Every structure is written in C-alpha cells, then in structure tokens.
Length: 273
Picture (cartoon, rainbow, N blue to C red):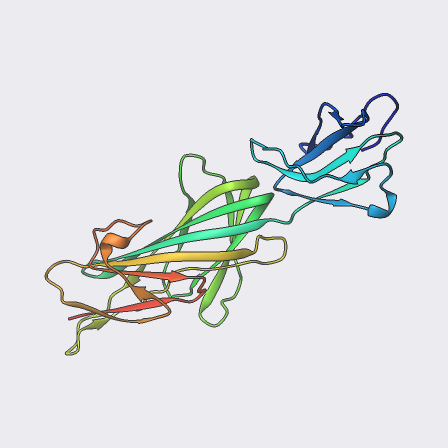
C-alpha cells in the first residue's frame, strides 16, 4: 500500500484484500492523524516487511469485519509520504473429513456402504485418495454423492499394499468447500459353522498422494445392522461403542454403533450365530 500523493491507493489481487481509511482523528493540540485497517480473507497469509514501512505506526483499534474477512493489520499516519509493503500468499489446502460406514448383514453377503464427506478450506484441490480393503472377488464401486456430483474419474492403484488398495478420486474442477463420495462393496458371508459366522469390516483410510489433498483431521461412525433372527456380537479395535441415538451422520436404524476420531485404521468385527 503506497501513498500516490493526496490520497491512498490499494493494489488489489484477485479476491485478495480490502482496505479502509477512516476520517482523521483530531487531537487536543489540533493536529490530525488518519487510521487505516487492512482486511483479508482467511485463505490468505499477510506479511509486512517492517524494514520498508515508511510513515506508519501500528494501530491498536480494531474494527468489525464481515463477510468472511478478517482484520490483517491496523495502522496510523499523520504525514506523508507513506509506504506499507504487503506480501500475500494463499494458504495451502486444509482438508477435514467425516466418514460414515454402514454394514447391513444379508443372508449371503455383508453390504458395506461408506460415505466420505470432505470439507476443503483455503485453496482448492482436485484429487482425493482413499484406501479400501483389498478383498478377493469383491467389486468396489465409488461414486459422487449429492446433487452436485463433481467426480470425474476413479483410478485404482495397480497393486494392493498390506491388504489395502489405493483409489485416487479426480474431480471435474478444483473443490473449495464440501464434497462427498460414496464407496460400496459386498463381502461374501461364509457358511455358518458351530461357532457361527465371522465377518470383518474396516472403514476407508483417508490419505494423500502426490498432488492430492492431505486430510488433517477426520472422524467417523460405523453401524452394523442384522435381522432379528441373528444374535449379534462384536470385538472392536480403534473404535468406541455408542448408543445408536448418539449417531450424527448415519441412521439410528442399526443393531450396533461405533465412533472414532482421527484414526486411520478403526475396525469392527461382528460375529453372527
């Protein structure tokens, strides 16, 4: 921000900044001082080179800022020339996620459905990477969720790693804000033995690859539903059992419910007898 002469001008980047020069203060001895405030969106990091500031003093008064803007700096001047060098850099993406995995036990297979809801802040991204269990003979289907389906292409990794396969989800454009995908697959249920039937289910792992978005935090829920004719029990790892009435993202129409936080590898193993 530089003083071109009698007034002030602001060099504006694309959606980058707003500035305000308020009416001058009048002090008891008659001299005047102007106060200015610089606001920016949350997606920008603002830096000032103090060694190049001319004619300005840091102000202490703040002003309310609306519409997703925040106050980045406040300053006072009472003489010219002035110079306020500002550097603006867009913050890297910050991605959080909420995962809801429901398991419905059918007579011959377990129907698994995972809804992955991302929320992207600061900068847009166009790739998301998830890991799903690599099960022999199981067909995985991944689709966009919601009215604004942004999914363009799904690319599976050529090889599985330690029982998991990576899937890269490409969107039609860079996403900023919420976006959701759903993964579906069916796990065959073996014939019942004397000790019943055991089925192991794990929700997706969310991660990043080259050029994709890193997930900084995630939470998830899991539910298991079975017919009344079955007696259902489970052993778990990395999840907390909750009452179905505590579910936030999944239907409460379930037999068992679990919740986990920031864990890339929770698991629930229901046993039917």
